Length: 167
Image (cartoon, helix red, strand yellow):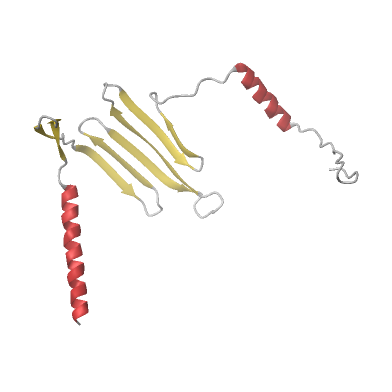
């Protein structure tokens, strides 16, 4: 009976420690800014950005939709669903959405994205794009593609180490 009692006490102590840690992590995060070499510190609180609007919808079929807008103009939205539900060969989670914010230099940033069976793809005016493919490489890719559509017949080759058998 004593070991059961001490087990309950240990669980209670663990619970109290977890609550203290959670409370510490949930406290507003502030930081000091200043010259650490000369011992001059200035306490500065981070700005609190309010959520102006928020929606969150999760449906029984697994589809979802959410969006939010913050007081400093940040916004995000996404929706998703299970494509071809019940068919293991073609079933895939499909999600798409966008987010936007203002960069430190004042540039508005918007990213539109899709994640599905083909992977994650993002588009935005600020994202780098690959350089154009040189014309010579484009032509050679066209020839390779054309040859793959019209394959030549396999020509058997003589193997001198296999007594004249053709492969």
